[in-house]
Amino acid sequence: MSTLQQRLTRPSRARIGREKTNWPATAILAACAFSVLMPLFVTVSMAFKSAGQAVDGKAFSWPDPFSVEGFTAAWELVNFPRAFTISLFITLISVCGGVLVASMASYAIHRNWNRKFYRYSFYYLLGAMFLPFPVLALSQVKLTGLAGLDNPFGVAILHVMFGLSFNVLLFTAFMRGLPAELEESARMDGASTWTAFWRIIFPLIAPMSATVAIFAFLGSWNDFMMPSLIIAEQANQTLPVVQQLFQTQFSNNYHVSFASYLLAMAPSIIAYLFTQRWVMSGLTQGAIK
Image (tube, rainbow, N blue to C red; front, top):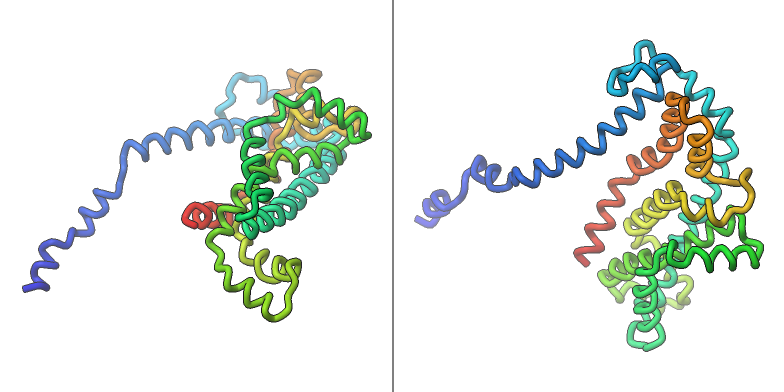
C-alpha cells in the first residue's frame, strides 16, 4: 500500500519539468543575452570588413569577403604591442596582488575574529567598499604624483587597494566553511601560522582564488578612468585609453576601430571562458558557506 501511495503521490517527470521552467525569467534572460550578443556580433562583423564595406551602412551584414586590413591597421596605428604589454603588466600585478593580499588579510581576520582590532578592520574594509575611485580621484592623483607612482605600477597598486574590500569579503565568507580541525592538527605537528596558511588553507580556497582572480582581471583590463588620470605619459597608457584617443583622432575608420576593440576584448573573453567553471564554483560555495 505504501508503495502504491508513493507512486500516486510522486509527480511525473513532465510535471517536474513544467514546474521547474520559469518562463518569465527565461524570457528576461534571453533578452539580456540578446542585448549582449548583438553588439558582439556587430563588433566581429565590422572588424572583418574592408574599408568600403564598413561605411556601406550595413552594420548587421556578414563580411563578404573577410578582410584583416582593419587588424593590421589597428596593430600599427594604436601601437597595440606596447599598449597590450602595459595592460598585461598592470593586470598581472592586480590579479596576483589582489589574490595574495586579500587571502592573507582574510585569513588573519577570520582566525582572530574575537579580537576587536581584526573585527573592526573587517568593518572598516566593508565601509571602504562604498567609496569608489571617482570620489577619491583628485586625492589619489596628487598622492601618486608626489610618490612618483604616476605610472603603470602605481595604477596596479591602486587596483589592488580598491579591490581589497570586496575580495576580503569573498575570502572571509569562504573561509567560514573551512574546518578549524585541519589547522589545529597542523599546529600539533609543529607547523607555524605561515606554513599552515600556505600548505593547508591556501589550497582549500582555490575556487575562491579563481573567482577573485577573474574579477580582478576583468576590472583591471577594462579600466579606463584610473589609467587615464594616474599615468602621466601618453606613451605608457593602457589599451582602453589608447583606443579612446585613436577613436577621437580617426573616428571614420570604423573597421579599424572595431578591430582594435576586438583585439582588446579577446584576452578577457578567453580568460573568462577558461575560468568560468571555477568562478561559479567559488561563488556558489562561498554563498553556501
